[in-house]
Amino acid sequence: MSELPEILLVDKPKGITSFDVIRKLRRQTGLKKFGHAGTLDPLATGLMLVGVGKGTKLLTNLIKLDKEYIAEILLGESRTTGDMEGEVVEAKVIKTLPDNFVLERAVLGLVGTLSLTVSAYSAIKVDGKAMYKRAREAEDRKEVISELPVREMRVYEAEILKPVSEIMVEGEKRGLLVVRFKVASGTYIRSLAEELGKMIGLPATLYNLRRTKVGEYNIKEALSLEEIK
View 1 (cartoon, rainbow, N blue to C red):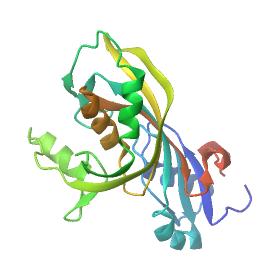
View 2: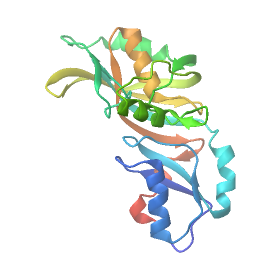
View 3: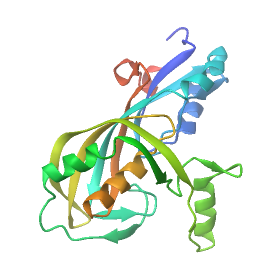
View 4: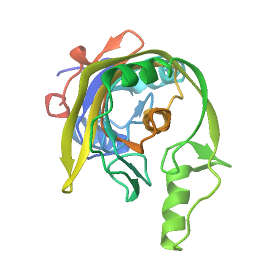
């Protein structure tokens, strides 16, 4: 690419942080001024809106846009981080997969405004410090953060994309459900996954997450990091 647009649509790969994306762009393009409109966790993939040069001034408004995700939710265990990065907190043997009608009703029950606990490993700041930094410092001290912030989250749309299926995780039978969510900014999909589990009486955690839309921006228009020079 000879000249980068002010807003660059990037498809973040799995296994790197959102800041790693910015760092790679600086190295590949030789430009220094980059910023992004909303963090994606290391295990998540998908659409990042990256401001380039003067485009960084637009990020304040872009970060407020609604977002869409495709979430793979693991039923039968919960983890410290709310995703597969963490240690298992609770596990439950699944002899029979949950009924799809029950799951559909529970997923639809997530639509609306919810007050949910935010993961201890989220990027949300409390007293100016990111929660995940607090959690890791607590880990080093062999402590657990007991009081987690509660935030209002809004789900506009929720639909099951694939019926629940069986999956083996570390030798244990689990259920896997694929759900599309359209949510307001500030809504944490890890929190929705855990809440869904509570609604059906099973521990649950986020297995995979892909962001597909931010406002009218679509992942179909995004470039991989390798395509940006």
